[in-house]
Length: 251
Length: 265
Image (tube, rainbow over all chains, first blue to last red; front, side):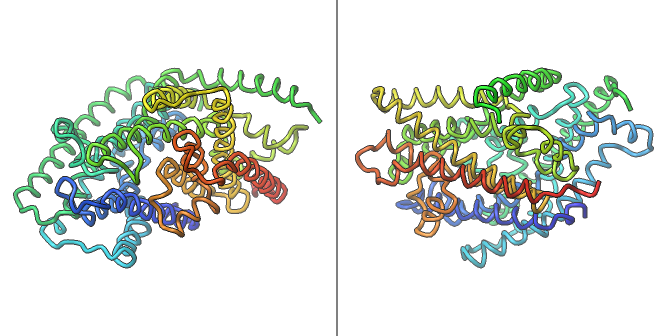
């Protein structure tokens, strides 16, 4: 709800997102000028992938790293340490609230724009049914990364550097900017064993190519779930280590 | 009124203090500088992936795109290094701390911007220069003194274009307080600057040339060096576009500063 106070903000975010989609449209149209498919993807596939990628990017940006980093640096974390609440779950649910607002205010208009203005046709298949689950797990993975970066503030105090480094790694390796099929095969092999593809590539493929068959789709979902569990475990370990070095100046 | 020399001296004094304060978080500073370097190379990585699948983008080869992108990286550095404080303006305006800038016998825009000097932006500048040298060697561009002069002039104009767009977006804070989304939009537009303007249809190309002239940040000025035989006279206007836009921005800033009446607190 706090986000709704500054309503003009949404208008500019939606506008920014739409300009991005229009620019992507021109860019990919020029790339597909003399080609019908590249790496098995048609223009329609790639455009849906990239356009929805930008809409999902806004959803999965939890800003939890900035929030947690700030609370640690300013010493506000002490308040949570004295209360019987789990700090990780507390942060998770406040990020989830922001995501739901963005879903209604930004992602939904984007999909409407895609259908109305660009007249893209979505394929129908089981992938569409699995997409909401895939997106939710992607959100959890993204959150666990942000949370762990935030926790690093116990050591480095300011987390600006770590946070942008994480953002670059994710934007290049997760397939949010360009479908992973475009990468050279050797690099693809590496990217698929890393956790980043589970954030963007998996949910985006479910909606771009929903007809891949249950087996492929479910195994994608399973890999996502596996990464979510691994990263959650890591985040618990990290928190319990980090909280020991906490020192708060002043008060 | 202070002279330009006095302003310059003052700037170094303020920056020395600022850098000392930043060094407080040493680990973060180191990671930030490294992160900034790689962040500027990330887009290049995407170009590389893309050019693995296609031979050229709207008639431009990979190495030509590297040149345009290197030009872009250098052109956006002055904004990053010298005007980074614009991102904080919404907090200052919201919390009323902006009032302090009214009480010094200094140019307000100078005083406000001088409070931050983004050291890590220097790594981006360095990456841009290295890339520009690499691309021009690959392309066999001959750097005569006249061309180097032309490069400096076009870079100056291009840098002013981006500074103007971003600072104007930040000035929105004086009227709507939360300027962050407006700045975010300007920031996003900036990312489209290194793409060939020829990929856009009429209306968008017109907008990116005349209304939100991001074409003048990299694509048009870079053509002076890449395809000097086929550029339009418009390209030679780029330094003037930058200066004119900056004057306009300064006017908006002055309007904003005069209409700001503080917040309740």
